[in-house]
Length: 185
Image (cartoon, rainbow, N blue to C red; front, side):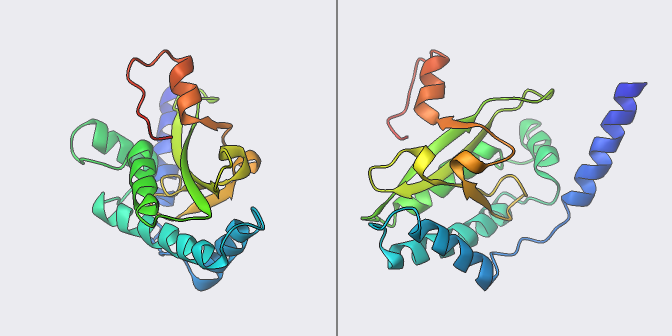
């Protein structure tokens, strides 16, 4: 009985939180991300930081529309896993965000991938793109997570994310003994 009540409460919460509109980022949000990217290193080109911040916000919104996200991320995952929707899992967002930002051919920034292994009872891992200064690893960067709020971009210094303990994607895959490790970080 307790698990049914918990499940119903989670579904109700997910339905309510899943109905927020995709914003594409307000100017002050984009500006805050731009400053955070610039502050990663004195070697970061301010024009690249501005372009990356704008793209991160606008692409998060575009991906949610492309994936037809109309519910919370967890419920959308269920739609993808059951075949109702084609894309919209966290690793889809991470792949697509990484690919979009890499097309910019930044000279002072690099786009990486990170995975956070489960630390909750649902045993759900999470993937995200990370933007960092050229030559830095994920720990010197910022997580760009459009999945967490269903297309509304969440970002944070990788090491200060209160929800996830991020590791480099290849480290996690190698630890698992993945037989096919893609060259992209």
